[in-house]
Image (cartoon, rainbow, N blue to C red):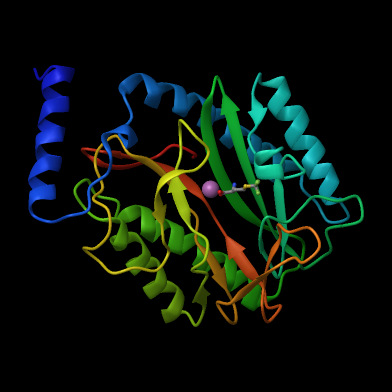
Length: 276
Ligand code: MF3
Ligand code: CO
């Protein structure tokens, strides 16, 4: 049986070999220890339970502030902290992004969910200083066929992105397959925002672009943990930021956008989804 020390040496030697061949390799600080992985998984369990709880309770007529209240009370009840509240000054516990809002929508008492809306709810949890991050897009009532297609294709983009997360693969593999699938379906991919390393901090290296070229970018190494969170637009890929709140990102053409996010661990056997 290989000891952990031997395992670690084998991984580090393999990284060195790739580095010599000219590949971009992760800093060793991005490779989580078994203890860190265990703790990050615990944060992810709460984060997933929270998304399940929201999916059971979200409904037409609800104010997005009510989602914020649910996130806050559920998280506290489980002894955890909402990572988004106060993050770089973000004013709420959760991002609620409706229709043409791409991400970072701010919950409000003035915003009510309407029949036919799609809404992304993005939740991030800190448990004992370890971070979890995931999001889902929900369909409210009778959603048009094209919006339902957008939501389905976005979910498929995430699943395809995860499927190529092989150890000793590359970050570029993820964006390559995601953008191919989005474009094939007549949709576009937001490029300014992307996934990210996560676990010991909310946002760590590497940046996970949802467009990319296979075989390029940072090497994927067992022990790395990051999110994949494609934002797929029905119309233009271009986005604008809210002039007043400085946070919310909208599609430039006001066409709908959808997003799904999972947190992934690279293992020697392949990708492990921590936020299922
Ligand atoms: N959860 C988002 C992400 O996927 C980040 C939101 S940061 C916030 O990275 F401050 F807007 F909450
Ligand atoms: Co994220």
